[in-house]
Length: 225
Image (cartoon, rainbow, N blue to C red; front, side, top):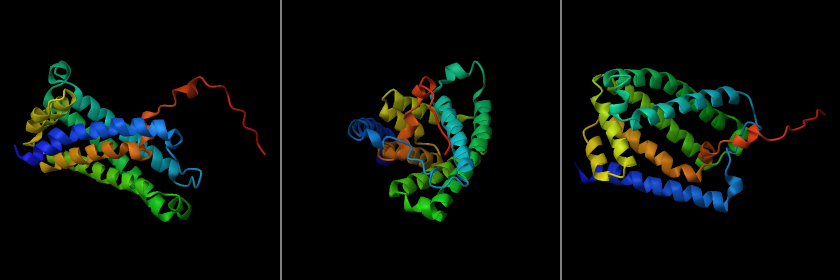
């Protein structure tokens, strides 16, 4: 195992976690009014709903799949599904929702580049996030192609062991687990970690703010002109 592999996949995840936690805490404490989605829909709704829905539906299911797939131990899911079948399920579902996400993020990028009103109100961080998401989705879809070359589920087990080792604070073991996998998977993991690290400094913070209070708030009266 190389030192670079250990730094990127055994140490970097913990740096990312620290920046994420401290960054979110400081931003919410010092700049609570910046904690929002900052939607550009009111500037121009044309094409926005379709692009946003495709992206959000895709990314929600992809993230849920990653969370369950990576953090569920073999001893639990083997009661319901074998490792090769789990990999096949991940490839099919991930491919479908990944494509939805890809179409959505491309539409959002084109909208911000080609719509004058939206472009004028777009910050550098908005484009950084969109392009990082585009790269991440493309890498994720590329891992499906690589996964098709080994359907025994062995690589999926290594990646799951890496994630579970990170969660249990075992950096050295985590780095050892991910060392043998393809560079495509490693790039996908690295870009994903980087997205988490820049999370507190972008509009992505709205992801962890569920508007639960909307369910119990009073009705709003809206009058026509």
